[in-house]
Image 1 (cartoon, one colour):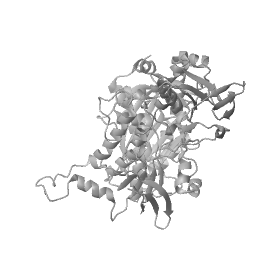
Image 2: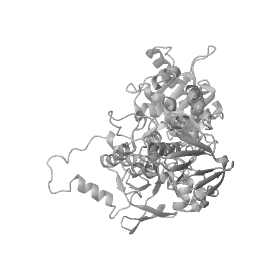
Image 3: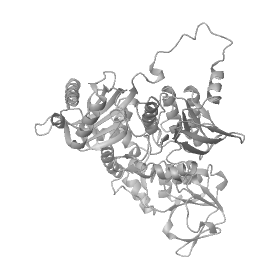
Image 4: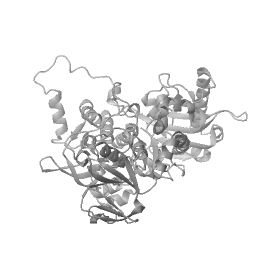
Length: 607
């Protein structure tokens, strides 16, 4: 089944005309606005279902938070409305119009809207369930998102200053001179330092520059893009191109469905130039200390060539990814092995291992890709499986969560609709998509099981997206390695079958041996809290608590794209779609703090 066919299977036909749906949506929004203005909790209660959800991204709370249940939602909305005075709820004729769609298994009227507060311009998504038992449509979910702080919009939204173009001063510094001077930071300090020049770091740096906030990105690699460029030979993205653009500058329409690593790396370099981002490559973050009195960081950097420099940014954004520094897992007894051991993050090419036996420990995406690369180069590969793994064909099943991006709206509207969704709905949608995926991939799973591979079919109700939110992995999108396993060209060995390591391989519990000239440990990466402990010290890591993973009480990720318990410290991570959307959420919070609209702990009511 192709992705378009799968899409048709989950999308219903609209039951109302465009004018009728627009009228219903407009009526709900105007009633909602009146209820907020009058602080009428009883009337407001008639607009929401008992099991409703409200997610706010800065618009009404200056925070990232989700509230569930009619009573809690109404209480929160009225409290926020009293402070920020939301008004002028409207449907923008230039954006996607109200339409009936299927979300999380329910047919709903989905409405993208705009409104204003004392802080600035906002937008949102409303999902209304159909009339039932004579009752009008009621809200199942509401998302409210800050789009811009009033009077401090992104630079590209403002009229260009053309006064400098004619006449030209041929003695003045040209663009290259200006960029070089701007990036040198001689005699000034950056307001924000971003650690990591991957998709997260570049996205938030571009956002901050558009907001007029002086930002420096540092990266230990020699070139921008090396975090992709230096990885294994055949690596490509496992989600489609139309989902994966960076802010402001979408990929060309000519690009393939799945972007190769070197293509992406080159685009990152171009993006830095086009978006005028200040980046220091070959620069290592040596450590940082927060000065409570001065409310700034003292950051030590090792510069290219070996010298050191100290800078004092007010904000430090850790953008090193969910998976960044290799976790050298303690595989019991491996010290007895005398051959070559590489972490998957160190593996680049399988050519040297042609005709030689290799063991790959792990069955996530990196392990499968490394095994496939090695097999293609002629190695004799065995995957060592430690626990059941979720496997979905990259097409179409792994792409099911992104079907809204094929429904017609542009990327900006899809991001708002998909990425602002309350977690409860995302979970429900994920469970339904996973059930469909299991049915669609039945023959694949049967073949893997016959080959001795243990398949996790999501019996716990956790989809691949939730696995990513919980632990940053635990699944594989089949781009061919599963077929090699089924065909017997890549072998599978259960870790429980291994008795011990020997100098030339492993001894199995049945008394036989399995030789290996190379062992690749695809055992994951350090979490961001561990990275913070390494770079900033255990005291700060203890203060901030978990980073990434689901905070069930807040229905949000721990310490992501919002203020952390450590003043001036922020975290941004995720896939390209996530960082494209949430980089703006993070950047607006920094802008709000710089403008004095929001403090570390409290929010002021007026812009």
